[in-house]
Amino acid sequence: MSEVIYNRIAMLRAERGISRRQLADALGVHYQTVGYLERGEYSPSLFLALKIAEYFEVAVEVVFSTAPFPRIGTGRSA
Image 1: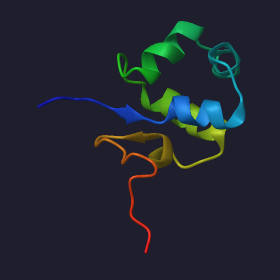
Image 2 (image 1 turned 60 degrees about the vertical axis):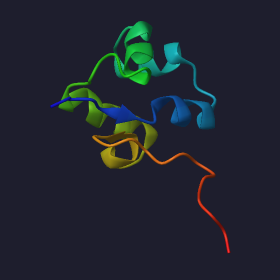
Image 3 (image 1 turned 90 degrees about the vertical axis):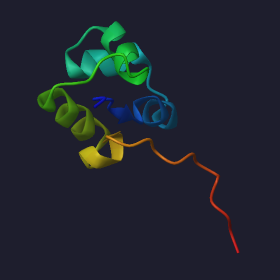
């Protein structure tokens, strides 16, 4: 069983105009760690996942998921 954790970190950063370095500084991690997280090359600890969600002021489920997030704009409108 694969233990892939999907995330929306890059999308949340882009929405807020925050660089990887700015996010890393706020979280107390190296800026490369943010890149590894965004690319799915590293799964965060529970503590780090909660810090990220708190930083963006959203529930952790908004940032992380065990299933791929649906693509934005793929829903049909009536």
